[in-house]
Image (cartoon, rainbow, N blue to C red; front, side):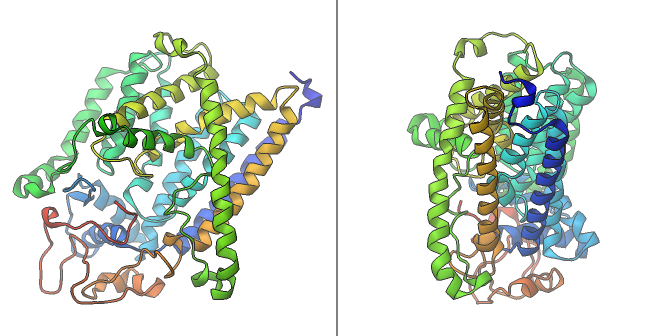
Length: 478
C-alpha cells in the first residue's frame, strides 16, 4: 500500500466535492433528456392509462401488454403515470417522475455503500452507476422497466439493514418493494431469487412477520386486477414460452449473462446506439458525425473486459460462496450481495421462458457495477497500479460523458424523427395527444388502419380489454 500522502486518489474532502459534481452533471444531463424524450407505442399505452384516470376517472387495473401475451398484473402502473399528470398535463411529466425515482435510488444506494467504500470508492460508484449510460438512457423516458431502479435500491438497502438480525420494518419494505415491482415488470422474479439466495446464505435475515404482512398488502392491491382478469382471461400474463428455455437452448442464458457484464461497461445495446443526428443537428452534421459516433460507441464496447476481470476476481475463491457464513465486514457483505445477485441472475436466465432482452435485467444493474467498483478501489490503493487505476477512472468518466451526449442527441427515444424512430402512425387523432402535448413535441402521423393504444377509447368506442391489446410498435423491440 502507498503512504497516505503519496496516494493518487483525492483527499476525502476533494472526493466529496467531486462526487457532488458528478451527481449534478448527471442530473442535468438526465433533465435535458427528459425534455427531449419522445413518445412511441409503449409510451402511448402508458399515457393512456394515466390520462384515463386523470381526465375521466377510469382506473385501468392492469399494466402494459407483455412480450409473453396478456398484460402486466396490477393497477400501480396507472397510478404512477396519473400522479404527475395531475400536476403537469404533459407527456414528459411521467418521464420526470421516472428521473426522480432514479435520483432516490442513487441517494439510497450511496447512503448504504458509504459504510463499505472509501470516499474514492463512492466516486467510482457515482461514475459506474450514476453516470452509467445504460442507467441514464433508461432514466428519462416513460417505460415500465425504467421504474425498477428504486425497488432495486430498496432491495439492497433492506438486505443491508438485516445483515446481522431480522427486523420487521426492513423486511416489510423489502417484500413490499418486490410486490410493487411485480406490478411494473415481470423481471422482478430476478430480485425475488436474489432474496432467496441471500437468506439461504445468511447474508440477510428476514423477519417473517414483516414479510408476511407486506405480502398480504401486495396481494390485496391485486384484487382489482384479479376481478378484471376473471372477466377477461386474455389479460393474464405469460401466455407464451416455457420455463427452462434458457437452460435448454443455452444461448438465451449466455445472452442474459452477457448483460450482467455489459451493464457495468460502456458496451451499449444495438437499439440504443442506432443514432441519427439529423433531427437535432441537421443533415450536414449527421453525415460526418454519425459514422464517427457509432464507431466510437462500438469501440467502447471493449470496456466489457473490465467487469469480466472484476467478476473473475470476485469468484477467484468459489468455495467461499458455498459456505453459509455471514460476511465478516461491510466490504465483504457488499461482495456477498453482488455474488448472490449474480447467482440469482444465472438461475433466472436459465428459467426464463423467453430470450433475455436488454431491459429485462435492469433490476440488477446496481449489483453488476459493484465488482468493478470494488476492484478499481483496491487497485487505486496499490503501489503498482494506483496511478493507472485513477487515470483509468478519469478516462472512463470522460468516455461516459461523450456517450451520454451522443445518446441525448441521436438515440431513438430522444429525437423527433430520423431513422429507426419510436414515432408511429395512429389510425385516429385523440384529445389526449393534444392535452399532453404529444403533437406539440413531435406530431404523430394519422393514417386509417394503423396502430392504436390498447386501452384508449377510439372515437365512439369504450375502453378496450387487455386481452385484445397489441404491443406498442413504437417502443423497444419485443
